Amino acid sequence: MARAKVQSEQELQQLVDTHANERKSAQTVNPAANGEGRKRKGNLVERAAVRDPVGNQTPSANTLRCIFSDVLDIDPKRFQDSGVACGECPECAALRQLQLRNGILRYPAHERRKTQTLQTEQQWVQGEKNDWSTCKSQIWRSNFSTSI
Image (tube, rainbow, N blue to C red; front, side):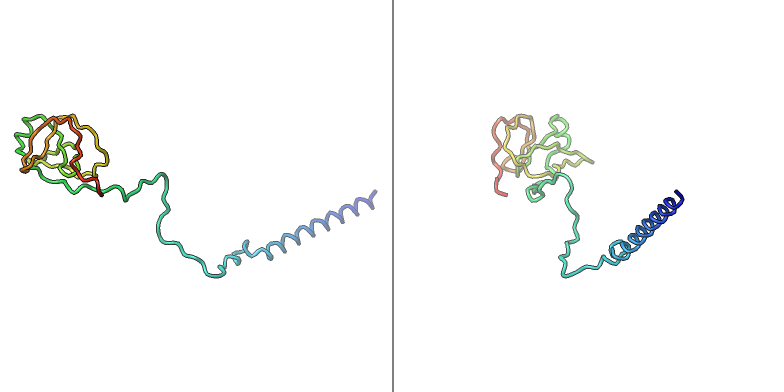
């Protein structure tokens, strides 16, 4: 019985020693584990220094700004008395809220209108002689160029 116990302990020690030797050899054989395997081989293609897009991206080429954003030649008192706060862009027929600040009436900067819809609101519209008047139009606004 004692002989079997001694033999069992010797076999266990051999297994432990064998396992320890395998771990040491694996550490020296695996260069990636000690940092030596990170050398690059051959010619690599370098990426441009830009960020990758994240999420849904909107195409920026189609978002063109309208060229009309200007001070309007409308008397501020006349504007306030009319009660009409929206104006139509003479370039693209976009309907926007006019901005009155410090006695100056401005049409805000905006993106070019992409659709043709029926405008039925009371609005300020520029006439043929650069005069502005209010009107309630019920016609399709297609007097702007569709070529971009």
